[in-house]
Image (cartoon, rainbow, N blue to C red; front, side, top):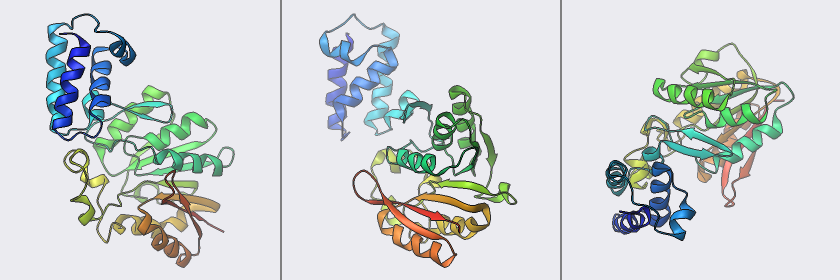
Length: 276
């Protein structure tokens, strides 16, 4: 069977399974797995696939029909100009988190110190380290599996980062930073039940869900934040729009100035705090 014929079959199967972008997913699955440019498949049928390749693709397509994320099937996800390894041990990096990198890069002084709190795949830390080689980057996560993925990604991207297993600030208790970036769990338990099967059934709940209306982990981090910021240091937390004013108020109570920044869809997505 040709790649183009297989794309057509997968597109129909994915649509029947409720996949939101069936044709794009079918093209990407075949392209990345078989090493055939998507444009080439759009322009012509191409040569017959080797039997082993077709068998592998059909197995992967069956998993996609069960709503396993495409990035877990290919093992790769894009973030800014990086291609990162991902597995079910880590969340798939989201486009909105790229704005968090923009915020920190604009705020970090020359040779500044960055802490990536809850690094997951390492996306934030690696993007910062590769785009600003002058800064000193530490990345922490409570999950050993996530740290394994993050270290692998850092090696692949040539990024110099100190990775530590840590429950929030526990492994850097006596250290201060010029910027703390935090993409911590913020989904409420009620919201979690309404998420797409790709997220709810396959991505790690530990990195998604938090008690206390989704603010349990963030509140704990915020309480410890002032003693880990250098004078004039800043932090940015990614969270749900309804949580933003609550966190901004909490930072005010802790003696930090705070402002809310929006994502590209105009929703309140980040709270930026600054230590006097």
